[in-house]
Length: 425
Ligand SMILES: Cc1cc2nc3c(=O)[nH]c(=O)nc-3n(C[C@H](O)[C@H](O)[C@H](O)COP(=O)(O)OP(=O)(O)OC[C@H]3O[C@@H](n4cnc5c(N)ncnc54)[C@H](O)[C@@H]3O)c2cc1C
Ligand code: SF4
Ligand code: SF4
Image 1 (cartoon, rainbow, N blue to C red):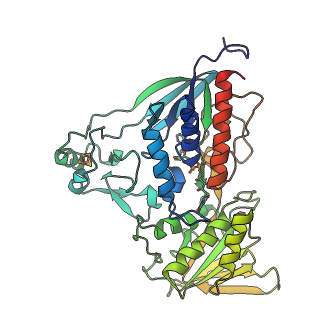
Image 2: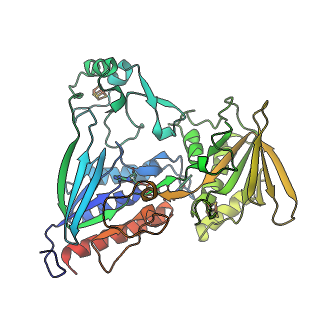
Image 3: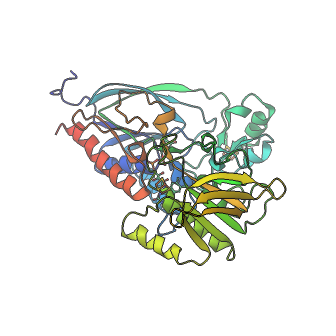
């Protein structure tokens, strides 16, 4: 009974991805009465915005908005959250899908009070993906201070070691279960919303911009972590080679984006992100000079244009129309020289700075890890919503590069599309 005339076999919605788009879809659908399964591969919800220091244009911390969403999830028995979970396969038709999901072990159960004793007992450290490997975390850890669910995790790397045993012995609440195994469950659902988001484009691939070659070239997402209180430097923007406060910073816009060799499209948010980053730097270092090298500044809409105009007035922020063509490092000082041609005057500019930031763009998660369902995508991996067929939809940056506001608007729309599948409109 899977043809178009059949009644939906399940009244539930599967949302894959617990970033801001997935959270919004799940909450909107559940708050009008639908059962939702929210599947997230990380040990926490929030996605990429949980790594940002502040949101443009209001410059408020994303944790406020996330907290409200987490409360709505806690208060809503219709939402069932699975973290450390991945969808293995989705089969079936609109109204009647079977989703096979693997639940990976956290090795910590519901008894966890976040007391931190396991972390103190554990000696081993593992690279901290949340900080893009700029710091390490203990093998027993809370992903970040405001993590939801507020439960510690044991890294699979310490399982079977003395550290895991020490962590278990330190726990007074019987919250550590070293025997926890991965398990597979099958969820019958009527509609699926893919909110699998984006990944920073791998800057190592951009051969002329020196990332991975020179210590003092970082990416925009690394800068978010450096500027965040919960980051590897407790919020101080310091250059990696020597921990010095930078007296000058250059931003290379469109790093990988709008380039047929890498990402042919505009990533939509990286101009606004660099303008925001200028505020992070200027707030910490009143004398630091900021140079932003761009092709065009894209600040769509009234609020973003106002933000741009405000930053432009800062006498220590220099906006230079010219794409960075090459970079080099002084082997002694580790300073970085960026070279660009000024598109207005035609003159070649060489600017030496303490730190360079690559405004890398967004790549859909699906570009590097194909999702296990029959989905239409663009050549770059963004989902194409097939409203004619219905049943499965994409929300947020899984469908296109987007800021938080448009991800949320789009996610609300996709909650409605999923509901329409269930009520067979
Ligand atoms: C440097 C930078 C700064 C930015 N600053 C701002 C800003 O100030 N203001 C603003 O409006 N926007 C900003 N953005 C954009 C913002 O990050 C995005 O709009 C937002 O992250 C989109 O949310 P999303 O839910 O679509 O994707 P994501 O945040 O990527 O969330 C997707 C979630 O899906 C999960 N997932 C992926 N694949 C699977 C799978 N197979 N199974 C289960 N789970 C999966 C991921 O782990 C993740 O939790 C910035 C972007 C950059 C690059
Ligand atoms: S697992 Fe146990 S020791 Fe570790 S934080 Fe939770 S309650 Fe504390
Ligand atoms: S938003 Fe700006 S930096 Fe990002 S790709 Fe578009 S034009 Fe380039």
